[in-house]
Length: 159
Image 1 (cartoon, helix red, strand yellow):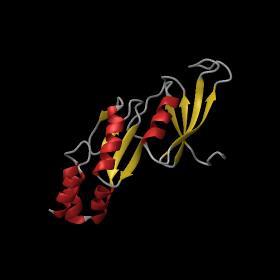
Image 2: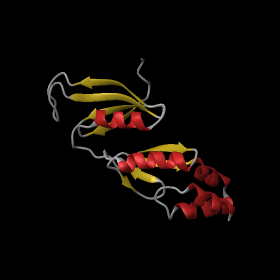
Image 3: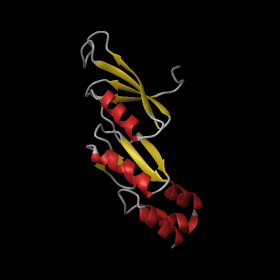
């Protein structure tokens, strides 16, 4: 398989492979394609340790780098996953939060490795695109939520 021209590189302390395998099990169009081991010792690991992992998350090519504890993830980067209904929203949210992650606000959560996720129902995106009072009502409703409640967004859209 040819390497993508542009790949998102995510820095992990030492759990890149576990994270990649979790994403591959959780999201469609996701997989782990290669695991590479360090040929020699390096600042945060030993020869033979997993150094990098090539994986795909919902069609997006990624590289997990086990670079050690020097850098931490923050909300400046997130994956945004569009969902079609409440069932899909719940499935992804519960997978992330239920696997050692944490809830945040407005459809955001964080996995146990510190990666932020926006689990965003299309109903919310469509409400925002509608503009005007409809978007204002949906936005106000969203601001009170952690996990997005699709029925509440649709109700707010209608006024």
